[in-house]
Image (cartoon, rainbow, N blue to C red; front, side, top):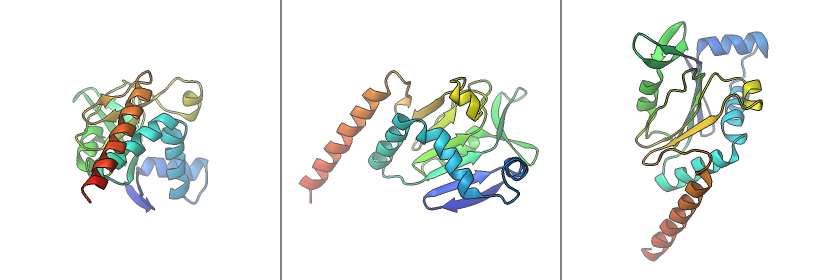
Length: 181
């Protein structure tokens, strides 16, 4: 696993994903291009999820994003959603637990063939609900899911309501902050 930091975004990229990038895109691995691609597919193409994560960040006081970019699979023996790095399996939930509360948003750029769910105590988590490819996303064969602590999964039919609640909460927090100064 290689780790790259650009501005307020940290990228954890598996050896396999780096090799694929070098073979398919450019022989010189470019972490900035990889970060932008991951952010585009998970947040930029989903403006309501992006807004919800930004509001949540302002309310909870956490900053930054961390991306896990790897191949995903399901370990049937241990019943775990796993990511692959250097041909070894690692628990996705353990990765989340390790970084929960250290960043506002955890982005899992990993296939999720069995639509496994995750949880966190402090950070928002954004992930796919199926096997991911840009083409599958364009054809709506895979959707982006968002988990917000204390709310849990926010479905597309209630996301507008959750955004409004967070806007109001942020406004109320600002008014309280002004009052006590």
